[in-house]
Every structure is written in structure tokens, then in C-alpha cells.
Length: 101
Image (cartoon, rainbow, N blue to C red):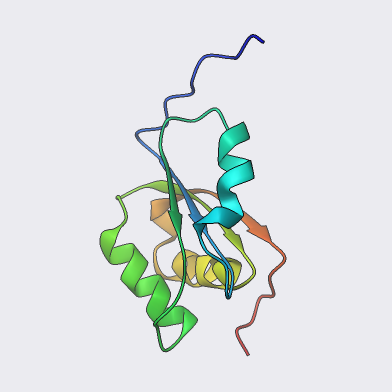
């Protein structure tokens, strides 16, 4: 089986945000198929709100990154986009609403 060369994405790593009651294993089938060099998966818990989670993540993530969020992860991604649009190179939202209500 021939594979394509690894896509170097050091300048904009891929950040994957899981949904409620999900852990990093949610993304395992996806990350196994992706051909990128830098991927970070985050489980979301222990925060008072989606906005608080977004702020906490922005404090630890690099200056520029690609972002994908599933369910609650998508809602948090929208908050991150509202707080720091210049930091998000690409955005994918999966099965989320535009409101955390």
C-alpha cells in the first residue's frame, strides 16, 4: 500500500474538540486516516460554560491553528472563533448548533 507524503502542518496544527461525554478516542479513526504531522485532540469537561472552555483552550493553543469540533466541541469552536478569529486558519463544525442554550 502506497501512502502520500506526510503533510507538514506545523504552522497550523489541527485541533480536534470532542463532544459531551466523549474522549479522544472519538477522533482515533479520523486521525488514523489523516495525513498531517501535527494533530491535538481535546476532551471537554470541567468548565462552567462553552465560553469558559473556549477561553481556556485559547490560552494553551498556538497562535494559529486549524479547528474541528463535534457537538459541544463545535459550540466551543464557535466561541473560539468569536473570541479570536485571526487565530483560526480553518474551521469544521460537525453536528452542533449555533447556540449553547
